[in-house]
Length: 338
Image 1: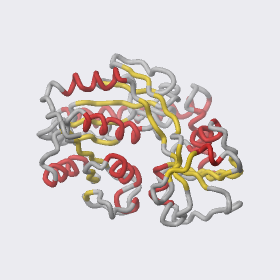
Image 2 (image 1 turned 135 degrees about the vertical axis):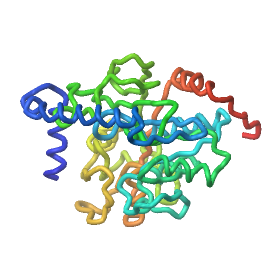
Image 3 (image 1 turned 180 degrees about the horizontal axis):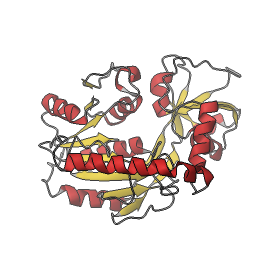
């Protein structure tokens, strides 16, 4: 909990240019220099960068911590599929205990492939491959699924070893914070920077790229380990417990309270926690609510937990802008059987 409190305090400090940020600002200049040097090495070809034979769409962010990239990736994948494309998805598989390049299968676990790739594969029913080097994952994906005609790279904005044709940057409602780079602020790299499209919650972050506001909300139903829906309205009659191992767990708790649920007990864990040493405390008879990402790891040890999906609503104008960009490559074949 001390570590979580420190993380929350640092995120709060990143929202203004106060004493903490000013103290760390010299280190942010070093970070800026390293970012610029790394980009130069890729731009000049000293560090290799690989291009795929199909368009690559990278969904990422420039801030530390969660920005809601995974639900955005899922929404884009579903849109591409509906438009007649045959998408595949690559990811690093952050938090997994394996190091190889591997496909996500029905038998995969979060420890093998990472919680977010597992969630994406289950939500989209599309091929997903994880590897530390996304280019390796992309090559393996195309070798196994030659029908794939567009690749989505989940959380790869800073992974320059894989060339991309479309860059989509996602911001949460904290925006760019104080505008300083790590560790004085939340930015991984300077903003604004060149990207194709921006999605944001809350306040627009600025920059020249087209910007679109996204909306986030909890689903009306929680899902049990067997895939059955449980209406949130059915949980209003009694207190519940809630658990979140994400970048901003308090936001999940606040969204549950906003739906009228009474949280008698909350468990905030580090992002991508594997629950290896987690033990439930408090009243174990209370329904336990968690995020979908957490459920991929929690259900094997707490099968009674209920996952509450986070839904993102992307404006139609965003999808139209993405479609216009993709027309540079080729028109997908529309599947008239779906």
